[in-house]
Image (cartoon, rainbow, N blue to C red; front, side, top):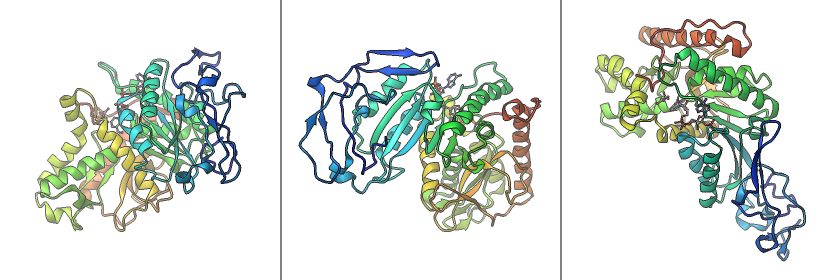
Length: 436
Ligand SMILES: NC(=O)C1=CN([C@@H]2O[C@H](COP(=O)(O)OP(=O)(O)OC[C@H]3O[C@@H](n4cnc5c(N)ncnc54)[C@H](OP(=O)(O)O)[C@@H]3O)[C@@H](O)[C@H]2O)C=CC1
Ligand SMILES: O=C([O-])CC(=O)C(=O)O
């Protein structure tokens, strides 16, 4: 039952947030949390009302354990929101599923999502966190921190290792969890291991998510993972799948601002073309600074073509050398930017980059891959590709290179997309931004 369904009569019952009786792995491979029956001393109020009038609080503990086996601690409480003045203007609750929820990126992301800074102060949310046996305890730690943060808009948190549970009715799926490339691991091996994760998650989304779910794939190699995911979710529009290239766009904006000596809010119309890899193409041809084409502001074409391009392509690797781990906070920020770009109208004349499905694209890019391109949104969760784009020989040749890489990645995962036998002939320079 949706907590934020303002017109539904809801019973409230309390179970001690952190005191599980057991955490067990059932026959289906699901972990369920079992909580104690509510005890009289910790029963809270029951607001059993059907009108705006609030009845006297009544203690309840008569119904046995709640039928939300995976809800977490304080989030197992349910309320009659009609009784809460501030919630009366709230929108309907949305379900946000996050995989890799115990990882570094999620640790930044979840708290920003829960604060309301992306979906707005009138949008209650449910966070459905996907982990694994390996990360389950850490996931409980995440849920505890969410409890302790007292976010008013965060109405439900659940944790599970079962994608089918986590993706049930998901309005958003933020797919972050993926195996990092380890020493000696071939890129083809990474594509295969992570591809299997995303094939499974695509199937789960197809089976149980909202038909309008928006999926943002972050786990690398994110373009091809997104392609695998959408191919395994044939009942969800391919247009709903995104691979995160917003971090690359933000990095490119920062470098252009630095070189031009302006604050970065003056930089607009920046496209990242292609793969989230070192072949990505940060487009300075169509980009603007203070509304003026970048090439009229930064006249050093050699710098733009060589240094700028390479700095953006390899920013992730430089950062790993400094931090000892890959970008997490800025990645989380860029995920929020990517969501915001879909739920708010794009400013007039501007656009944003996202790795999206190429079929029907106006740029002559090969069909049937996930390729970062310039998009505009009306703020309804959907997007259109931008038509008035200039492509010169330099840009075309770079786009061809990143396109070739993505086509090779696609051939390498044919066994996971249902398109036959995989053939891996990846170009030698195929690397993630974090690889050097
Ligand atoms: N697109 C982009 O712009 C960026 C993408 N990334 C990518 O995002 C992903 C997550 O990064 P980050 O949060 O920092 O990573 P972390 O290592 O902190 O977390 C990753 C999570 O992935 C999960 N995972 C899934 N399968 C495996 C596996 N086989 N082995 C190990 N872990 C696994 C783990 O969770 P669990 O055990 O719960 O499954 C883990 O918590 C990475 O793939 C990274 O390359 C990073 C930066 C930018
Ligand atoms: O390669 C990685 O894991 C990190 C990454 O994607 C980035 O920093 O852009």
